[in-house]
Image (cartoon, rainbow, N blue to C red):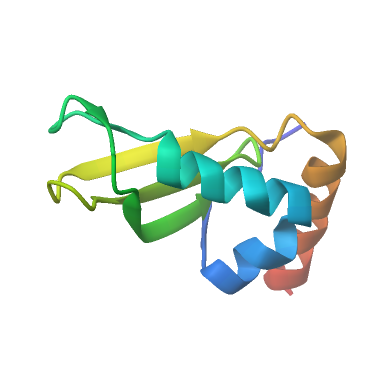
Length: 98
């Protein structure tokens, strides 16, 4: 089966894709678990999101800026392994393709 292409999504579209539990995990990870190569550790003040992508595995990739040092950061959240999320993401892709 051919992998879907990576697509850029916005915050509204992300909120449609994630359930309440996934949103909590997403927020926690972005505020407490993003590594900044410039700071040499976790972004202590969180990150400012610049772009959001739904990748070819239906994982979410965030690109942003460390709020502490303004260094570029990125984080992949592996939601695509969740069968329910994967199906929802595939239906979402179809809906925006039309």
